[in-house]
Every structure is written in C-alpha cells, then in structure tokens.
Image (cartoon, rainbow, N blue to C red; front, side, top):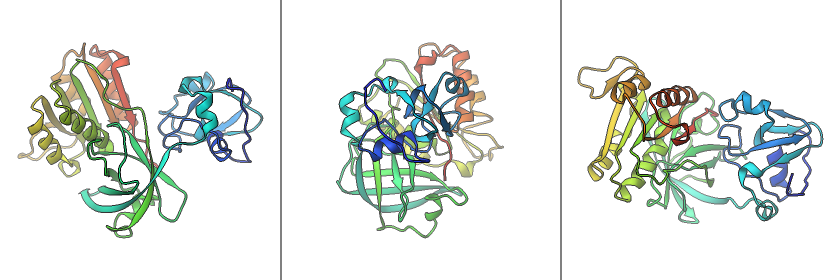
Length: 332
C-alpha cells in the first residue's frame, strides 16, 4: 500500500481480518460485505471476493475495487487505501473502535417480523455518535457480529435503540423471541458509518423501507433536538398496515418540529380507515414532487428500493451528489 507498510494474512483470512489481527487498521463497518465502508483499490495481486453487489457494483469491481472485509488474497497483494483517507498513523495504531457492554432494557414487537431492541449501555455508560450511524452487535456466546443502525438520537447517549428484522435462522434475530430477555448482557462495537444529515439550507426528502426507518428516526430526532426549520418529508414504505411501526415516535417528533411531514405508503391495499398513500413509494414521491431541484435526499432500506428511488429523484432534477443512502442487506 502507498503507506509503505506490510502485513500477512493467514489462509482463508480476509484483508481486513489480517490487518486487525496484526495490530493494523483498515476502515470498516459491518464486516460482512454489506456496507462498503472498507472499500479499497487492489493495485497488484488477486483476491477471492464476496460481498454485496450493492456495496460494490460490478463496474467498480472491474476497475479493481475490493471490499477488504470480503476479500481473501490468493497471492501477494498491493492495495491502495487512499480512498478511505487513512493516515499512516491510523494504520499503525490498530483498531481504535470501542467496545461496549450493554444490557437489554426491553424487546418490543413492532410488526410480525420486526422487533425493537433497547440496549442500556453499562461500560462505558454512554456513546458519542452521529445520527445515522450503526453499531455491530456480538451474538452472545460467539464471535459473530451483526450490524444495526441506531434509532435514537445522539442526545439519548446512554442507550442504543435497534430495529431488527427477524430472519429464519438469523444468528441474532432468532434470539429475540424468548432466548434473550431484559437484563441479559451483550457486547456491541462502534459507532460506524458515514450516513448523516449534511449541513445545508435545502429541504429534505427521507425515504425508509423496512428496518431502514431506524437511521431516519435518529436523524429526524436529532434535527428536532437542534430546532431544525428546514422542511423534512419522510416517506415510510411498507407492504401493509401491520408492517408500519414507530409512527407514534414520528408523530411525537412532528409535534416538536412542525416542518416535518410524514407520509406512510402501503404497497398492498390499505384499510378504509388507514391514513396515508397506496402504491409503490416511488410512485407516491413522483405524484407529490414533480420537480426536485434544490433538495437533499436520504434513502434507507433494501437495495432495490434505493435503486428505484435514486433513479426517480435524479430524473426529477435532484443532483446525484445530494443523495445519501444506507442499504440494508439482510445477513441474519
């Protein structure tokens, strides 16, 4: 790498794992190839690479970009980490990500397949983070970690509120229906991620799908804490009314921040007494916003939703550089 430093990887060990094991540091986030935080340029050599095509599109792979957490070298490699703004001092200092001991303060059934998990931080008792970031939760009794965005604002620094989708056989999510209970302790690490509200005078559109509402809740909560007056429109897309959750929290934020508009969108037929819109979330955005020049957009949810929303927003005049997103790739 241009830093002029070297380290060894064991057989079947990723570029990231080898660096961390040898007391070196490469930027990372989810550690399973889903977030793209560990993206680096492969200058020489070859690797076997997995990871999400959303975190690293095929065109970028063709240009030599790899995900350090999902790339196992098959020969000596030279990588360029300049895209991550990593300094030699940071690389040599090793992993500075902080670990936390937390206890489960509560587990709430939000929808048939989504749980809200409130973690109380014990040691250390608080975390400094930016609204929109995520933590890695260590599955009790294992070294497996799963990434979840925090739904609480930074002002609520003694807790980490998670939104967890239940997946069949999920390493962490499968524990939430009875095996983990309030009072149980676990370890989490972070914060990670670059998603945050950018300083701007532009109005904002925020689009959430599934568990992607978590970072949007955190960002909107932080905006309310800061007495934001910029217009914010939140679109929350779900299949049916039973898949909507935390609308009470959004409405409470709306009481504190009148410039906030909340639009729930159901892709299936809505009950007669259900407020909101019906159809694809992109169709509803298109009906409400014929033009989007001069807006910022924040997209959080499944990759397919983000792709469709980004295409619509740019077609309506929103500049691609003003679209910020966090793709939620299921890992269980």
